Length: 67
Image 1 (tube, rainbow, N blue to C red):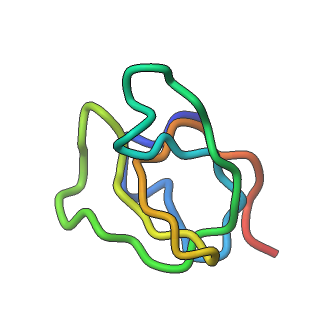
Image 2 (image 1 turned 135 degrees about the horizontal axis):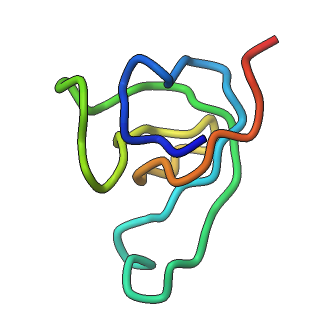
């Protein structure tokens, strides 16, 4: 599942994000969502989140539902 719809994104989910500095290369970073930063319900490039590690980027893939 991609991360373009805010309703699909929940705190605690395991996701892959692309950080701003990696947008050109498409390098993905994996982690758990700590905060959801995008306020709108849909974003064509992915919902922006902050991971537990503090890294910020747009969700590209949702790996699992929160436990």
